[in-house]
Image (cartoon, rainbow over all chains, first blue to last red; front, side, top):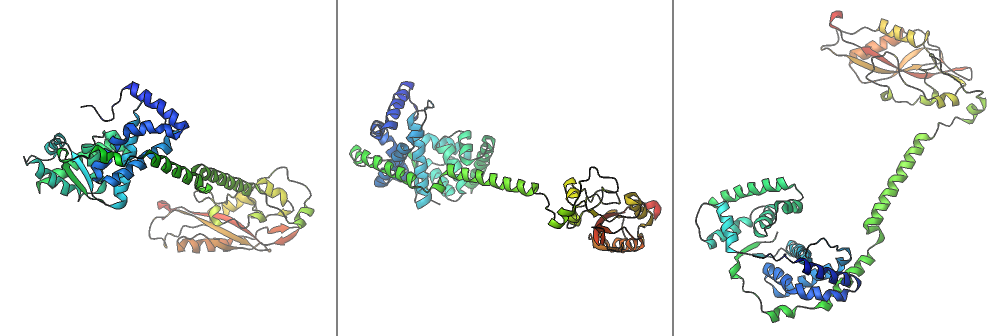
Length: 188
Length: 236
């Protein structure tokens, strides 16, 4: 499956030219806005399940991207990865501030992979999800973040370490300890 | 902390394109960006990281300069002393070396090194201070530093009967030498009571010192010494 972040070098180059133009005149940003509005909106909507709120946060994401555009440099990465990062930060900030329910949609393969790692019981996916949800709502926020980043967003240990401001090895150790903890909690 | 709700991906109902596009508004994005820029411009100067870091650097430099100036400021002699000073000493003789000048009077007892086994004080006097006070002759023990050292090592007795456990200590004492040359204890480091008593005995036994002379007039002064109490099992 092609990653949502994946873009060919030709597309990246094309986007870079648009960015250079947008740096001079913000109205040139409209091309990038048109291209990424839908994916960013859906990314936020999947987490909030609120149409108006998602529209508001999307506008915020693009306006922040436009504001920070002068400092954006071409590192050979697609522009979308930067936008997704801003969207992730904005939604995280929203949930932190308003303490509302965060929705996470998981593919069945993702759930099964986590189920295999944490339990020997062959419960149905629904049962397992309910149990996991209850546990995630009781454990420490940092532990929940670690599971979200590592198992739901498939971030590398290095990325997790960077986000938690710990080393890659420490992130690995914490993840495995957390898996052990999940195993124990799921048995109860 | 916000709650989390897990769903299966296939439960996601999606959203129609019309609904999705109803929130699309590029002009709003541009306007919001302008607000961010305005806020950035309106940000107080002292809140800008560059200005803040510059302020910190300037403050640190200022403190360093002040510190250096404080260190380098020489002791200014009184006009009376300045007028009477005739020449600067070219060298410091052995007897002059341990002398403590009037400017060192306030030297705390803690400034004397505590780890030195020497019986004499080791306060070094900067040459500049001698230069400004060369009409002063400091107090001295009859026979000089070496005689004082010999006197202390000869007269000092380890109070074995009063000490219940082995203890080696170098006691810092500030002597007060009055204008007649009689020595007495002015200040003594906190230590064992037996050692303190021994130090008082020692000072009482001291011969008359040569008192400090200021403009050929005898005056009282202070003099730091270190009295060693070295525990030796063989002496017990």
